Image 1 (cartoon, helix red, strand yellow):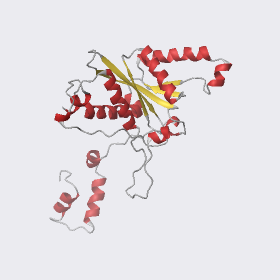
Image 2 (tube, helix red, strand yellow; image 1 turned 180 degrees about the vertical axis):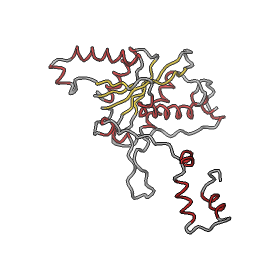
Image 3 (spheres, helix red, strand yellow; image 1 turned 90 degrees about the horizontal axis):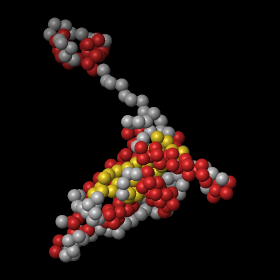
Image 4 (cartoon, one colour; image 1 turned 135 degrees about the vertical axis):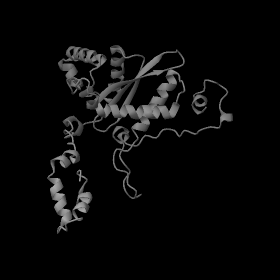
Length: 268
């Protein structure tokens, strides 16, 4: 029967024989058939490793973070490009965005100083193996070695930032920040499309995207009004859900005559 299956084999048998409990008998025979088992076998599923302790243990916001670059993004006022640095918390999934002119180590270190000034000093920082991050890691080690004295230790509760690099050529190891980059790019594409913005306008848009991402629910959203509202990353940052100003799409004829108007270039 060319290994047709249970129904085909049983139908052919009943042309000459009637087997009691024939269907179960045919199933047992076919299950022992090496050829049938070879083609019907299911591939093995990957055993997913447990999350690192840094991802599941209790930490303050951005105490354990991941960092990566995104871009380039082109601006229209100087015909140049800029890049985005994404800091994301590994525990509460919040993001912090910094716009930088290039991917140099100096630009990253300045952005990192702005980050820890607003979000606090992180104890663990994950990243890929970009040369910028590796050089920044060596620079940070010099900083901590220089300021590692008793007086500074009284100010800083931590001795420094433990920088952990993922395995080379394995971007899926950094999935918790790569997923945020995808969300940021999706929001940016839907907001401005192919419009060309100035550097200040781009900073404003990224600040709004940061607020939107930090206001997304990270717990289950119930259908009953009596149930509690879902938690968002902003609840852990500011104690409430961030609400940006509502965007009202104006009529085309009501737009400013200024051709460089941000609203005009977005909505037209």
